[in-house]
Length: 196
Image (cartoon, rainbow, N blue to C red):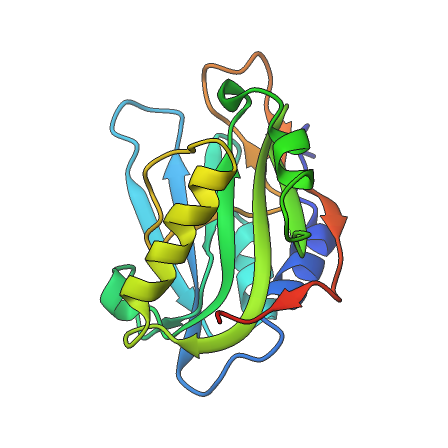
């Protein structure tokens, strides 16, 4: 029995909230990064249904971080050109940005989901009516830049192929005193927006 069990129910609930309507050919990207060694190899997997994602993640060992694509993919690639649809806006706020949760909760738009990815660091999602990723990439990334600026100038990554930590998994970064279980701290399914 592991000291750090994967919370399959938390992962499933999160994935059902994020991917309620995968279209034919769309996939959920899962990336794992091994924090135990120096090489930190990345493994990418692409799944057509939530049950497969959860079962795969359940088998990932200790010391390996698990990330999930913010938006659904087409086929088996993790680049911008592989993103099928944009289904949310997002922000990654580390504790180095001050009181990250207060900044997120003071945003003009209420987040649909807020995930605590480590003690005091948050990853937020604002669900939007889905739009085609390829014809809207510049527009979406421009909105993300403005969102990040309004939240205090976060990191420089507003790429539509972004990945965030999977709730139910553990954050194994070596700079933390102990592993941290990633968890959803807020979910408002009524908070859905449009790109307009």
